[in-house]
Image (cartoon, rainbow, N blue to C red; front, top):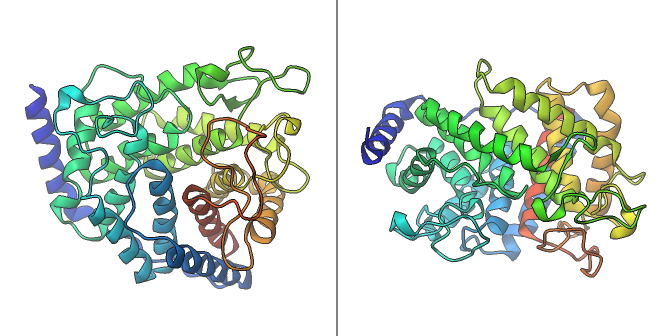
Length: 382
């Protein structure tokens, strides 16, 4: 079948399956701890949305916030959060990078230009659009997502996710889209690409992922006896991304055992690196490389482990102490009195001691990560 025909079939399948898309009702939260967590979520949301316009570009840094915003909406049913997301999506015309000529689409290098359509940092917004499509089955909400992801699913290349962040930005889109289309080739391509990335970046001894090939030991060594360098937010992206994949992947999928194995291995590797204060340092095995608190990696780790416990993939007895220490940091140190989320390492790709990280260090992706963790903690405490 020609690619144009495959794309058309994929789009048709989505239309036929759309009637099956139903948004779950918000969970019933009865415990005082869960109610207090929701109050914190509302405070954080009120601060962020009153200080930041929804009309911002659909690149990864902003779109990562909106994945957390979507979780907050699904937990609380607050229409304000949904309206904020719709403003974001409409501003971006339900697209990521906008180049129309497929022969010009790029992904092999970092790029913020409109040709990097296949670059996962321009695709994370599709996760939000898929969720919004499930709220209301309007074809324009899904059109660009289908065009891009069905095209990618039918390419022979498999090296799309050459850096760890992409396993949050791009990996979950395939399973989320599968929940609408039921198209197996999306799951096949997803695993093919994940397997390539995993073989490149996963360190089986540390049970952690390198940020990208530049950082594989001994290319980069820590100050702690020349050891391996793993970046907290980089591994946070992966654990959170795997949680999102497993949330949508069919229970009987032939790929599920491998994803579960890596999710559990990574959770073990992450738990070993937690600092006494409940947070994870930017350099996971050597805090001396970049000392002090860091919220974004900590929040993504907390979200991933909470999701794992809440869904029976991680044992509560083992991970509850880790989670409670992490939540204490997130709720008492990262969360500021005005509702802002601080101690977020700025945009980067490594543990960088030259970048200031303090109570005033905010970023959309850090707030989004905090929201994801808080929503899962509310369910954990219900």
